[in-house]
Length: 134
Image (tube, rainbow, N blue to C red):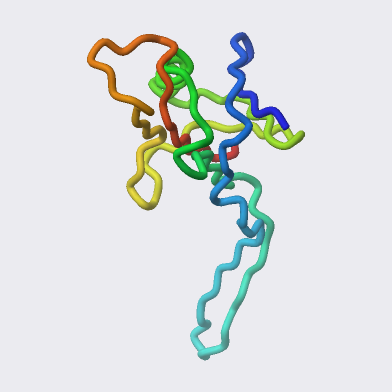
């Protein structure tokens, strides 16, 4: 199933072999505290946004993208607050890049499939992209 990302004017087709590594996520938010009497006070709710979506290659045989596509992603990454539409597995998500993730990872990491000193737009890269729903 196709993976696409758009900013409303430009549509990127992303390799459908990218793996959604943090798909197991709970929409339930829980906050607990103790009252002055020592009783446990627990509040439950549904998270309205903030679901992480990390797309990454499963291994070194899948999920490549061209340097040209990577450059477009990096252009969008440099636009603070840009909200995009990610179509993943037939579902649309409003997302932005996840800058400053809790684990310190940048929003985009990449490495070339083969390193060339004179990189071209059609060279292939392994790319991990970190989004968060808004």
